[in-house]
Image (cartoon, rainbow, N blue to C red; front, side, top):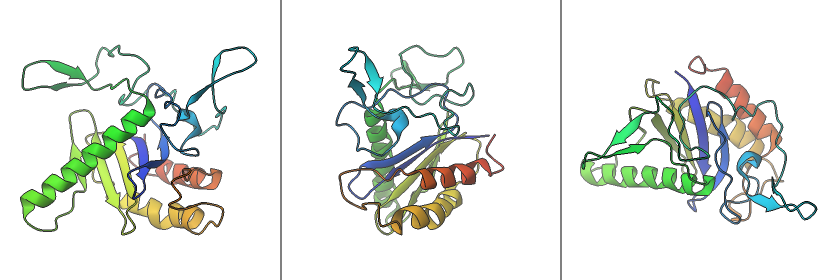
Length: 217
């Protein structure tokens, strides 16, 4: 069992923070203007280098906590359309198969994750006939966990499909690092629609919390 990635969305449906631990390949960088600044340097849009004409990342993210090049875990998005030999597939009703690797830029991937969460949450509320909460769902490739705050922030985590509910972990992130280094930080512009909430203290604290879990392998 292991934990793959974490997304945080604000009440405007925008991804304001991203971090992962067990992805086999780095996600494609977001397109220019696709994500807010300060979401994650690892998936920031590529920019043209005026000196040599080559595409370079907007910043060189060399933190030792960055494990995007890890050789373990389930691939959610890849740099190309090639499927790994043992990559799980989703079977469509028509009998065709679709690789679990999306091969999308990060901004498109983040929109898809949010769209799935909102669609399932609305469906559950309509079918249940009462105010029932959507907390997780599982496929053969991964398990998605959701924790939503009263202010509209949504914490979404992808893990191994055999992992028990991690909603308590998402709540720990919220009441711990998020409140300490984001909400109570006067330098972080909350709900500004201008930039994400990435900062070194918050990212380091989240990383320590996740790596200290028994399910983190």
